[in-house]
Length: 225
Ligand code: PGA
Image (cartoon, rainbow, N blue to C red):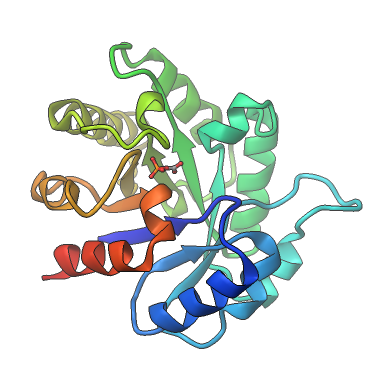
């Protein structure tokens, strides 16, 4: 199972240096704040990026810089960015094309309210999967129910199971490809075993719990033992 650690805008330079030393032997995907990315060169970890810019101007993050840093994964369409209108449907499509052209794997984040039907998820998937001339099988999906992002709630496992199975089935039936589907939202060392035991989740996208190195090691051990 892929373990993706999304630091968002957290940790000081001192904290991130200690974190980097502690995580060197772990096979996880790390997404530190962009200014810290160059510190991650010495470990078994894989580097990912929280973003790439859709423009070529002051303040952006270029795909070339990510390639040179050996970045393997980039988040696209995270709910927090869709919500402030930074990742619109058009921008998401542009970023995914750009990443695939440069052999970086996009993680397409899709979110809904748990009580919704599947319409919103279908729209978020179709927006990207209807594009021509891209290798759809290279896209990873991260399903994140809105109410669980950053809230550290008890996860409704039946809901997670239903949504992940729906996403997998919908993509296979409509686009004839089997994409990896990850789960994100309130994941921590207390619920990770139950999520693993569902046996349908290909990875975890972890925010708050990723900031505490002991918590990360606990999660890693529970997933890998
Ligand atoms: P969380 O964040 O683990 O703090 O819920 C998940 C995310 O934002 O991807």
